[in-house]
Length: 334
Image (cartoon, rainbow, N blue to C red):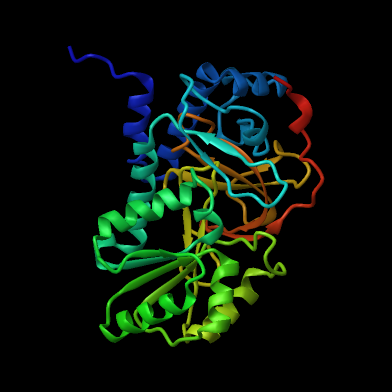
């Protein structure tokens, strides 16, 4: 008889093969039971919500950990990892830390979904305009882009801080060569570049990762995209939705409508209560996320973002919640 796999390995094999809602819900319940049993912090939070595996029969029954816990606690399932990703934050803010037991899970998550949406990274020259992330170590976004560049293998791949002129000439050369390019950038840097060096792009995907980082006036995504489309002569601007606290990303190829990988689901809740979750409904509210790739931290996160969920599971990010704390954040002090 074959030896039984450790529970985490069994779950990892399942989660990247999810291909329908029923399989997702089954693995979701198994991951919840695993994290309840192996994550002391999350178990304490669930117990305060009076939710144990005995009372959980569907994703809407699962308690969602407020995202602020990644700033105040070490959120870890099994073991005590010393590797972590850290958020960039803004001046004076407390950064989130996402402790990661196995970086290969992150790599498998972002590579699988990138290839599904965009194809082989080898087809692209990848240019990155991510100054606020490059200025800090332990950025999950920088880790992802570096890995994609490694796989791409093109000599023209590169990161740029404020070398806008160099980036401009690189794009001109690649456009002239009709080379497919992915230009991925933090929103404020892309806007700065677009203002100083507008250029018509025909073979380049421009992808914004969100974030003004206090550098520019906050704008709604529609206005950001409109400015970038005009500057670059593009019909659409792509978007990436990810965060330090997640090991999966969603992509929007047009109009800011995001699609998640099969192991990641968006749910909508009432804005002041992380546990009032609605599932499979097209409505607006605060965003809760199930990211099963977070198997070694916590897969059930109540974010600080507002959004709209559509009937097909795609979603739109409408902005941030007010500064008031999410109800439930103060329930646990460990």
